[in-house]
Length: 278
Image 1: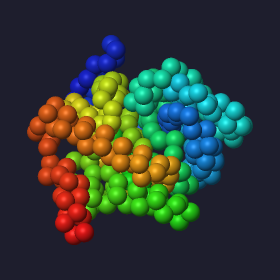
Image 2 (image 1 turned 45 degrees about the vertical axis):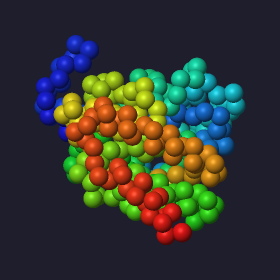
Image 3 (image 1 turned 120 degrees about the vertical axis):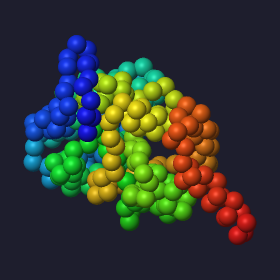
């Protein structure tokens, strides 16, 4: 919880306002999408099945797609409280900020478009926030049995403690958990104080986490608030993605040297060990 006195846009927020806001919590789900209408259909189908009893909204931000998902969103208008916005392409971080600026909620939940949401997700988030409120949380990702072998293998590579030190998975073994934007929640107050995601990509989510810590906010892992992350990429695209992640980490280390951790070297150690074993 953010425990310091803060002024944002002329409004004064005192010590326990985050907790007070939660007493009347309204969730806004923010989903940026780029040329992936089929993924949005699967994601929205899973949100229809949520067992959450309170109202919530969904904000779809089309990031300059040439193949838009407007017709898919329209199909769900009668089933979900949903809004659709089209903007020029500016990347996922900026699109998430765009959606949060337009959202009505007190607490924003961010998904990637290639996620499928378990029916208990929002109920689990509400339970966690009631038990121990935090202004920013992250959840793990898992693979469904129906996923392809490649999708399951990539899921393991991205989440295993052996390969990434648990910084993307459900590990409690790290001192400060850095939420990842495929499955992340942030309070409106924390968003306004931090101005949301920065201009670095990839790496915009750990950058946001560190800036939130420096502002006095806390982050936490919600182990049971997981999503099924259906990464629709092949090994070539995956290698390109991992290469970009690897280039972003030294930049973040140079920006925030006090937050360097041994676990950030686990992927390199894993690869060296794998080559040696072969």
